[in-house]
Image 1: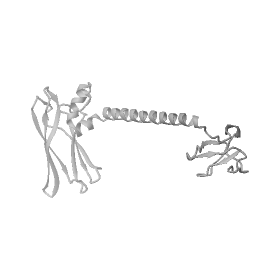
Image 2: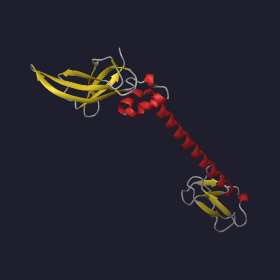
Image 3: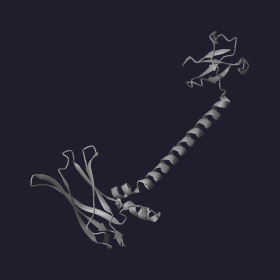
Image 4: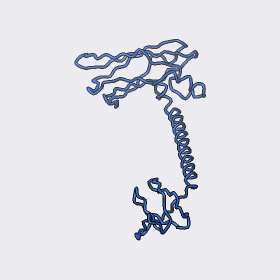
Length: 216
């Protein structure tokens, strides 16, 4: 016999032998609508002559199993997504550890605990008190940048080269250059002052960033 869901009009082919004399509850697998289906011959049965889709009506006993399987699939998908997120975070933290330490120096200790201290450029060093000033000398405009590098660790540290970046309002780099501090090695707690300048800086420059880079 052919049934039609009154909610979404989806048609089903149903074996009438599965219906008792009083009928039974059936559920539409497409929209979830549930109704009581009378057996063939009942005055409330509306037979249809249109071709039915190749679908079957799930029995009540099957509904619980279907819900359990769906919930299990959702739980598995949720755990898989969480594991992928955690793994991706670890990979990004490993590959971009220099940028992470520059943005948040306290995390440097975590890298040291997991044995990545030697991999991070400028470990144990801190760039601080950076200032900039525009000067006009003999008709040439210059941007003079000054700052300090401090050894915040308890060991002697090699001072790597530094990189300067001028950025526009969107964070894009409009000018980048390299320079070196006047001291190549610092004792614990020691500070070295650096100074660098850019001639005729771009008029788009609105921000300044100083960071460590590797030696050439």
